[in-house]
Structures are given as structure tokens and as C-alpha cells.
Image (cartoon, rainbow, N blue to C red; front, side):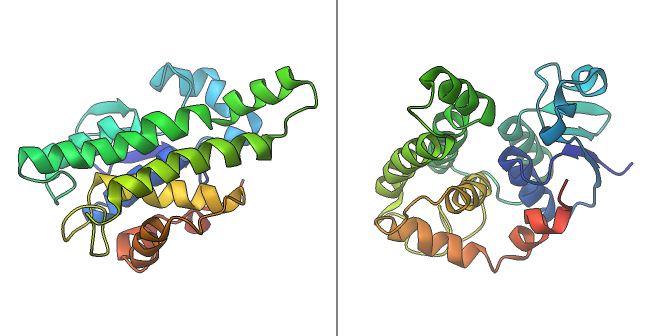
Length: 210
């Protein structure tokens, strides 16, 4: 049975999973959950994802949530190098992935930024918030990668979960006008990954705009 991915075209968490699925050569049916109109909080989405989030992946008779849990499941069941075969490599890939998905992403969620901007009562804009926290997080990631990722990937010679996390975050950084001039390693890896077939197949522009 073809996997079903409930996602949103501009969701960075969904983007991560699309990259992983494409990398593994898996076909999937996409069902859009429109974050712009609040569909993620509707009863239908809550029934499959109690957090009211995307993505959700239906695969192997399972309903999986949380993008990194989904990618790790795919790595464990389909291989493809998304997680390295050695324990030190897996630890590094997880650390790089978590630096994006657990440090940058949560604080830059639109609901979090919106609450902060509202509480600031006009002294802070969404753009200010996003640029500050994305820049700070990516600066740390640059240090983690600099000198240790000489090729076109975050780790080793192939696409891993860390790359699945990096690409959408750089997409978001550019969307919010974050200055990446002091992050040459991130820019170089992102440029190399832009030519990867899985990254191209997963790009938001290919998945419609709602």
C-alpha cells in the first residue's frame, strides 16, 4: 500500500520527511493540511496527530508523527544511509539534526513567534524574532560543521537525516532574510544538496501553494 503523507508545502518538518522519502525512492500520496487556515487543529487532523501538527505518515499499517521519529523509522526499516552504520556517526548525525529540529525550529514555530510578538505589544516584529533565533541557531550549527564536513553533505559521503533537517532550515532562513554571510559551510553544503534529486523532488515549490 502506498504511504500517505499528511503535510503542508511550506512546513519545514514536512519538507524533511519528503526529502527522506524521495531519497529512499518511495512513492507516496500527499494530503495537504493547510496550516494557513488552521486545518491542523481540526478534528480530522487531530484524530491522526493529537498534537495538531504535520507531518503524519501512514506506512506499514502505522500512523507515525514527529518528523525525526518518522525519518528514524524509515532509516531502521529501509536503510538508505539516513543514519550512519557506526555509533559515533549516528550520534553526530542526531546532534546535527536535533540542533535544527529541537533548538531552532520550536522557538521559530509561527505560533510561538506570534505569541511573542503579540506580547511585545509593537516593540517586536515577527521578522525580528525569526532572524534573531534562526541566526543564533545556525551560527552554532556552522561551528559544529566547520572543518568536519569537507564534502557536499553534513556527514560522510551521502545524504543523512542531518541533511534532511539542514535544507528546510536554510530555506526558512532565506525566507526570513537571515544573513548567512558568516556561515560558509552551511551555504556550501546547501548549494551542493540543491542538486540532489531527493532534495529537488521534495522542494516546496513542487508541492503547491495554499
